[in-house]
Amino acid sequence: MNHLVARSLMKRVITGGDSRRYMSSASRVAVLIRPPFGEAVIGVRGQGVGMLLGGWRRMISTASEPSSTGEVPQTEKESSGTVAEKKEEKGEVMVSSYWGVSRPKVTREDGTEWPWNCFMPWETYQSDVSIDLTKHHVPKTFLDKVAYRTVKLLRIPTDIFFQRRYGCRAMMLETVAAVPGMVGGMLLHLRSLRKFEQSGGWIKALLEEAENERMHLMTMVELVKPKWYERLLVLTVQGVFFNAFFVLYLLSPKLAHRVVGYLEEEAIHSYTEYLKDIDRGLIKNIPAPAIAIDYWRLPKDATLKDVITVIRADEAHHRDVNHFASDIHFQGKELREAPAPVGYH
Ligand SMILES: [Fe+2]
Ligand SMILES: [Fe+2]
Image 1 (cartoon, rainbow, N blue to C red):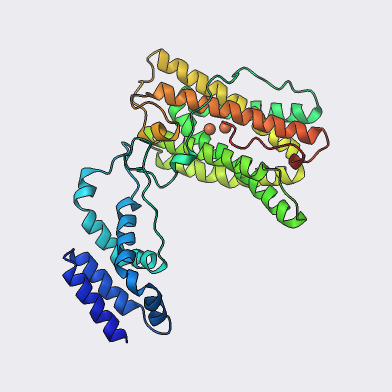
Image 2 (cartoon, protein in one colour):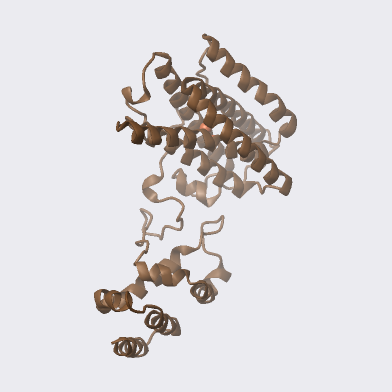
């Protein structure tokens, strides 16, 4: 049986007229898929091995992340066969083709191919830059004051370390900013499982915030490359901050959200200073990275100033979400009792 299948596969592949990649893949399928699973798998997918490999090939064409310009570099285009073969050698392709996992072809609205795997067109949005940037939660209660003072204290070493290097500052702080949403979302997720209750959309809202912050980082890293000691600092800070915030959220989610609310107010301030330096010509207003143009649906000729403006608007939205979450707790209620601001950008 195996012999017959292998031979028919080879014949089909050879007469198909397409590359040796097909041939080598097909023969590997025939060799790798062995009883007891092999015959069953080939039996089910027998007619579609060509399709299966076709699907794999589509995956290969979209598997590599694009460069900062959003286009596949010429050298990579030219050597895509080599890349595919290297992947083949590692066995990655075989696993994908075996399970039939492939990403369907995704295009932009103008029909051009979607170059990103890390986010999809339906996750992009146009930022609401009309949001009030000056809103501030006046600390009234003891916990509010603790949160406010903590954030102001944290600002001192940050100011000393970065001074007016806003690109570097933003990149480093975004590595921290993406933690609270993930911790809060994760804990609410576990609570939902433990208590057999719905979250009111708050899991999604907080995870959306974490992802949005991570996209800020993915954008900033296109502009500023972290040095080795900065990577080391991020590693240390993440280890400390993740655990500290995790414990804080368990003990007092209202304080945790208030702290984040004030951190976001500081982020708005920092990005405003960043924009001032761009206006003064101290920071060059370079073209926006391709990832930012697609993520925030910016015009093709967008600049760094446009990117910082939409990131600052995001921070203002995070400020509102976190102060709102803290207010809900201050009223003695659970987050799920108030509808979560899902998709609030
Ligand atoms: Fe951010
Ligand atoms: Fe933020």
